[in-house]
Length: 300
Image 1 (tube, rainbow, N blue to C red):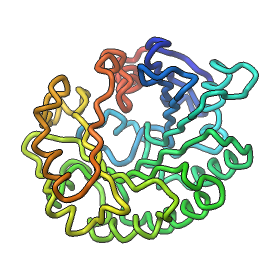
Image 2: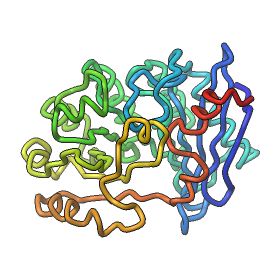
Image 3: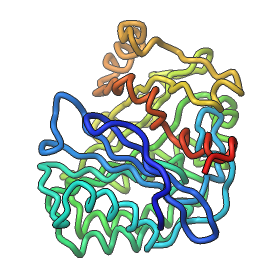
């Protein structure tokens, strides 16, 4: 992999564009979360495919899909970030979080499993894995293998996230135009995945105007012992604007979503209101945003 562009700032987030075999472009990100320093927590967000076959209506990673990435291409993203910040190859951050959440649906790439097995062999005690999926309908065998890897090497240091976005089946299909597990199937799979010592499974909702998120339906299917709720603002992506997908609350005014937070809390759920630094919108480090701009404009 050859890095052909980078953008951002060292104090918050940098997005890198890499060129892999066939001249394809991928992107990967490093970030910190002020006021925490890089020594406290360092986040790497890597791609698992060239483009993404799912094409969610609000994500710029969709389109330009070519193929899944190889183990070597997955590792090359992490290696570049590590060597850039820690030249001796030893990451000294108290928490080194590696998120498989950039371009691509990770359950559609079997090489992800081998990548994680290889990472486990290094014995990094500070690594926390974050794995985000829309739960394609055929993902159960993959998740079962993922559980084995988690149990062997990342017990208590693995975060599985299901990206749901709506409790209305039709709305969910409009936003995520792919065959995915229905919510009862997802609930059962998540319970099977998690052991008592593990982090709870996250149910992620981008809060979108006019799109149903019903805490009562979630509470009827998902238990508070195994699941937590994450509410996320809609990022200002190009695809969101094109599809006229509008934010359900103002990220600069978190109180505008307090009613939804309260309804989940009344059902006994822990709720994470995940609002990042708004500067990241200017940097363009939202999913697929930077490389999509380059592809569409012919830059580089």
